[in-house]
Image (cartoon, rainbow, N blue to C red; front, side, top):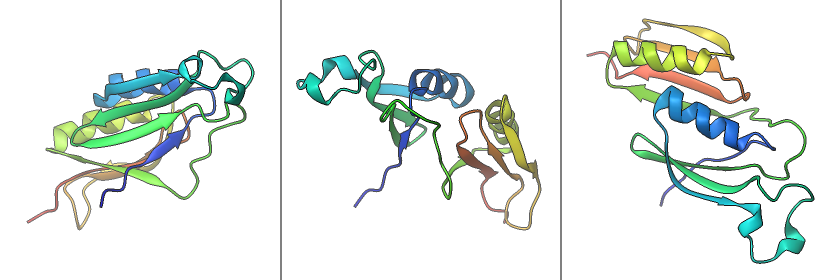
Length: 136
């Protein structure tokens, strides 16, 4: 069994994809726009060029997303994505990149369970936890 997150950016998916490519090295595996849907009667008005589906490879994981209904504000309440960095320097870089235009909710610091751990809400309202592996 495999569980994969599916995020809805409500009209800001292209912007989010570009941000995650730059900030954390996300790679687009597949991208389909609403104008490519075989049944155009199901396409929200004015959203032909919006993202119907995108698959992003982030490290060893696949995260999927879309513009959803292309209206309103994205709401990611109650969920966080967790990034495990190879070392403290990578954790620092990832955290700073995700915090750009966002809000730090817990500064990146040493904890009892990791040499670095912190939480940030990015510019799209998505919550992230960044950490290095467990301490020995």
